[in-house]
Image 1 (cartoon, rainbow, N blue to C red):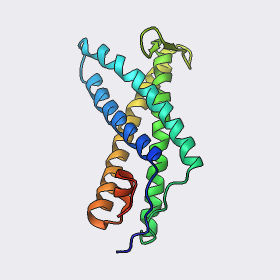
Image 2: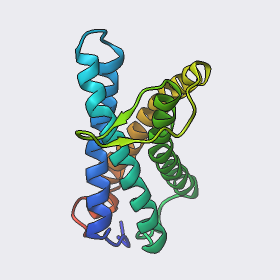
Image 3: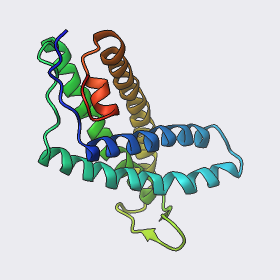
Image 4: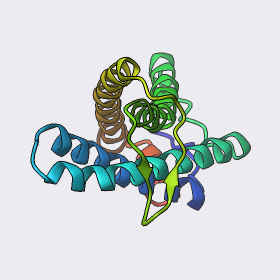
Length: 180
């Protein structure tokens, strides 16, 4: 199969892999938070909040970088439906990477809980204290987490498909910056 895939830049790859580690970590931390009522919940929440804000900041940087630095094109041999799926899944990932931290921040604000980053550094509330709004945002955050998990699984499956089945250089371009 001919290979026309160019590599991703170092900045794209660094943002991708740092965010991948942070997002997967957040999903596991979130699972730990909702599955416990012990003091461990507070410890996990203390880590969850600043990582969420870091993900949001990195997602904003990533969007800016992506808008100013075009990613390499998909292989010309990729069927149209797979091209549409690739673009749709990336849009969903970017939307969730931006929305989940904002929903979490809004939820905490509506619940009257401070967002403490590190030490004494605290973010201002972005919504007024409102228990009803807190409940709605908590449900939205849960649904968003499941959606993010599903999209990440599809993304991972697509990466494996490109790397192991199609062998078209797409996976290698994100791993090393070089196509096959």
